[in-house]
Image 1 (cartoon, rainbow, N blue to C red):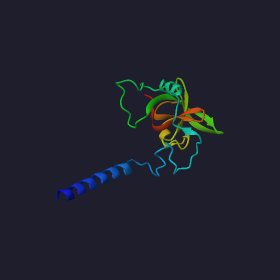
Image 2: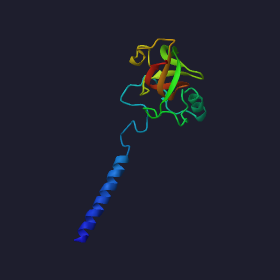
Image 3: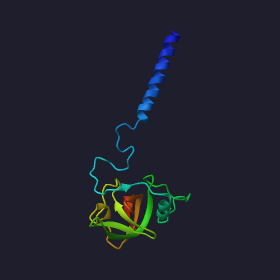
Image 4: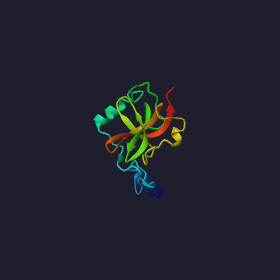
Length: 158
């Protein structure tokens, strides 16, 4: 009888380990290795999330509250920071798109999936006008040779 229980216990262990391995496998998930969803057509070619250490230091100088501050509130979306800047229009690929001019850098605003550049008629900017100072909650990214912000929230600076 104890031999049957040993076999059942071993079978349960092997099944559990197999389920763990299958659950950890990235398989066919295209989003597991890429921050850009592949089911949407990419308008912006060349968006990467990777910033060099020097670029990251330069970008983090523009955040309202430094990320290393222990009193900094944990962001709603992990990896995001709050940036304050003046809303302006900048040309990219022959078209005008929204950007913010901050203390150290200019940032193009992209949607939070980093698939397209935000235009002035985007719903997030419905309460904003060019020249307004706004606060953008976003994840910093690199757009070819410019910085961009994968934007989650936009608020007027009050």
